[in-house]
Image 1 (cartoon, helix red, strand yellow):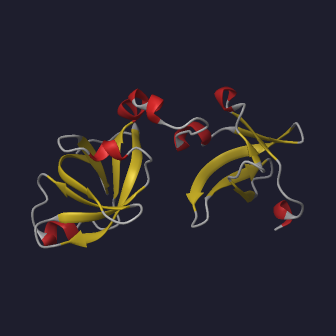
Image 2 (tube, rainbow, N blue to C red):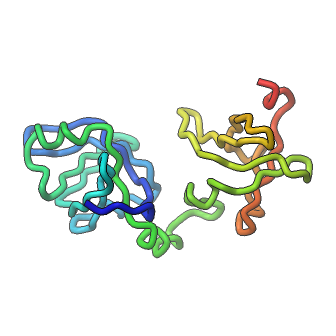
Length: 177
């Protein structure tokens, strides 16, 4: 069992498929080549991360895929991993950065950024929630109050991301909720 914080989530195990240990996964990454046969992935378990090698991956429907990992060979073993997350090492993700679309970032680059509104410091990004209609930034202001800001171009400017800065332009009344 490896315990480290140098991993990026690429999928979540949502169920099983068949009797031979195949996992049904919800894909979070935009780079589906991360699931090629022979590549290493890590499942985040209670005590840390455990490494597995990919035996097979089949794109299924939309952002769903079927994944077979070495060492998970029965439905019982697969069911034990339901709701767990699949990760890759950050250094592997960084080596494939050129495959990302322009203006696309890894969550870890955004979390912790200083947030500005109308040019003045507002708070910092605590987390990103994946919503059905899009991502949502969770921003804590100076008083510790949390605000949910839709991560859309009209409300969030990431041009200062290299300097750990994000500017927000929320619609009127959004921060009053």
